[in-house]
Length: 267
Image (cartoon, rainbow, N blue to C red; front, side, top):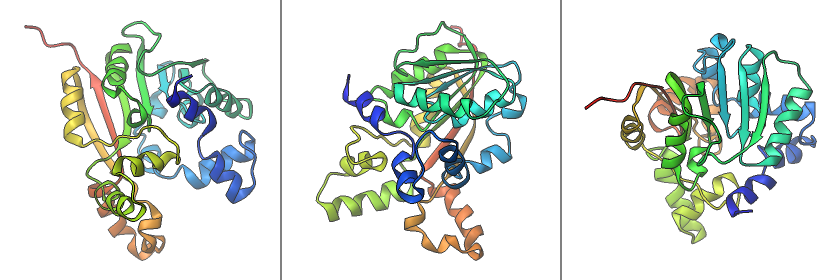
């Protein structure tokens, strides 16, 4: 087992946080309810605007790469999609299955543990591919993105979320913490997902735009969000909500990208 897989096998989505704060067992119905209501708030905007295309997912074949605890997969399945639920972590696959056992969404489901850098699917297999908060933890992220595009159908929609390089957290907080803790910036960034996390990257819009265009993906939406609340305590007061939205769109740490696979340019 490589170190990347080993880390994610023992570090399930927010499991430590939920058990510590609420005393809730990971994988229980209460765990999913707590996560959905208290921790998975950073993409409420995406649900409210149907950014993921949940509402039009009926009969679409969807691939969820890095399923975590099944938040994305569940919502596609609940709207009638045929969902392939994948993660490098077999523990995450078992956790995601628990979400479906405790609920009963419509749609066909298939669970599979696999590596994003080498997807076991034929070319042009999926109408939509979602890879949320995964690419920045993948050693060969270029290969992983190439695989995402490969298995997408022509005109298939690709949904990504990565950590943003030109964010307040990356540009300001990471250097300060590195100085205070006498560690490298890379070590501080790695620790965002856990103190022994072997790898975390961050990307600019421009880097992803160049990479995806080179793979014949037409980008039609970038969205920035999330300012870590511990760094912006005033934003807990509603009077500052407009300022929070203003800053999120410019220096947020989470970068969402949506694009469509187009026909390769002919020479």
